Length: 130
Image (cartoon, rainbow, N blue to C red; front, side, top):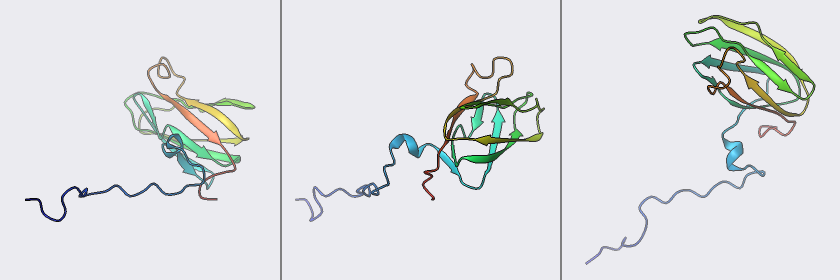
């Protein structure tokens, strides 16, 4: 006959924390509160590809970890700027002033964007750590 634990789940998942309006979609975003955002570029992705930052001056530190030259573009409210093209193993910086809103980040070289080398940048004063 069954023991005393029959019918009791062995490993119950902990309840989800009562968040401040966070959704499952928000969970995949990486937040940077210090104004510096490191991004690795490789074939054919940006890592991280979903970023949240506070408004103001942001410095992207872009590392080319791929085998081909890459580039980095930020396009959104009031801005459409591109870093210099940089070869494998190099790191470049792109400093921009960002207002609240949603931006597209991508590698605009050749067909890299179409092959998946793009992401989303959300600029908001409502970061989880604030």
